[in-house]
Length: 250
Image 1 (cartoon, rainbow, N blue to C red):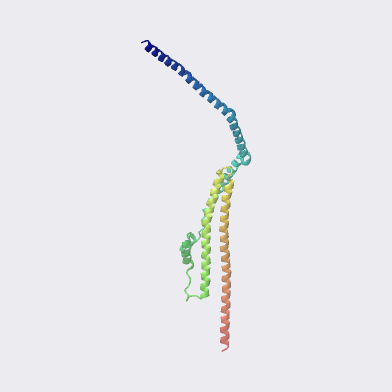
Image 2 (image 1 turned 90 degrees about the vertical axis):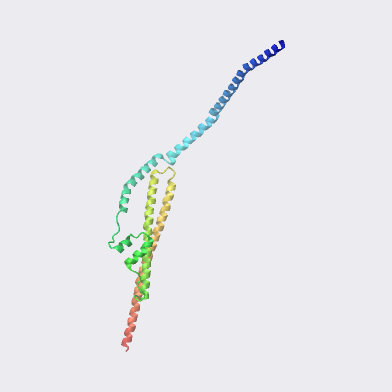
């Protein structure tokens, strides 16, 4: 009994000692965590914090330089306001100019030719107005050749003008879009808008060159047609002279 009582007393003392030591161990762990957090906070404030403060100061300096020197905000806002003002002044006028009716033909066939916007419709409308080539027994070969080439060049000029009108509408749409973008564009995007405008300008110049080439071809055909008529007149005079000589020689 004495030995059992002694063993129980020893076990109880061990349990009490363990219970007393556990709060001390937990307290020591919390203190270590607090010390670690304090060290991390001090490092962030003194080491990393100074670096971050320097970076923020540099970013502020760069932003101020961009807004005041490279892309002045005041001038950009003034430019946007001026673009919006000019656009408001001329947009209505441009719309009125585009809305002016230019068709003047009153008869059915000429009106269809004047309104023809599809390239496949121009040839049929042209033939209805200017008629088709005469049959070989109705005109000489030279006359049919002249009429054929005149019709071909006239049709080519009409089709080129039709395509030019369609391209002009597209260029007006592009110009309107560039104006809208210029009014709300972000700083630094001027070079992009300039590139778009230059590309549209090149396309417009190419179409103008095509129109000029068509006009030059028409002028060359007109001169050739006049010379062909002179040549036919010379041939007719020669034939008349030969006939007169034959008559007088009898």
